[in-house]
Length: 320
Image (cartoon, rainbow, N blue to C red; front, top):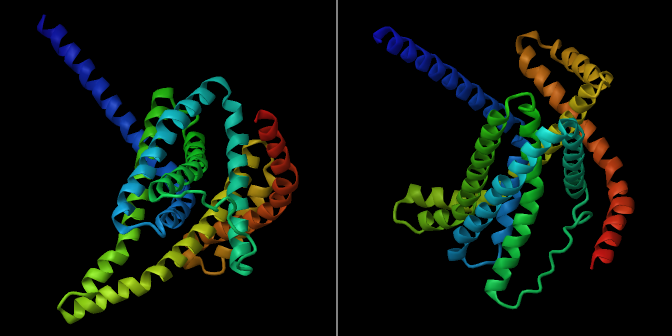
């Protein structure tokens, strides 16, 4: 009797160790997938604050909370079940779908490059508001932000799914949920800090202590510069991630040449300074991927404008 109980306890202990190891693996996968989605996260944090511009200060945090809630619904109620279903029914679609998302990131990054080089060349469409009250304007902004977030969230979940596609289904679900929740909290937590930084700066600038007033003024005057820098970093990260996804996707589909060429070029660049080999190799790969991202974006742009957009417009017209 006692030996049987001891054996049972040993089995339970072994299962607990396996479960703990699996959770550690899932956590590591979630961190790795989250790192790959960094470009999307940075861009999202840079873009989202514009949705509260022109609205009263006391509504800023509630609006961000609404957008965050919508983002979480996008990820958990639509994209996560869809990703798991795709993994079960048609896992072969994951790589092409991820590459399509990578092309979208390249396109968005290319538009940002154009706007940087020629300000006003690429303007956001559909920003004209039809709202007649503050409540209507708020709802309009929130809806627009959630629609934009859906595209970015889909890319985050696709990157995550590709990173865990060979894992058991429960681990895929766990990692997708962790990344979805973590990214949402990170992005909108940062956005909340950004939009309230001006108010904090003004409050500090009005305080009595001289050094505190200087800090407050520095925050107020520095926030526009900070947002520009954040937007620029987001642009580079989107191009790097998008280009990298396409190169790796081609490798997964049996076209190994581009990835080998990028690797050899990065190694050649890193050999210039052996003491910083690891850093230079990473910078070389990221830089080449970003340049490829611009090229792909330039190719995809006319395709979207002159082929896909008209087809989508016709489809919507027939549906209406």
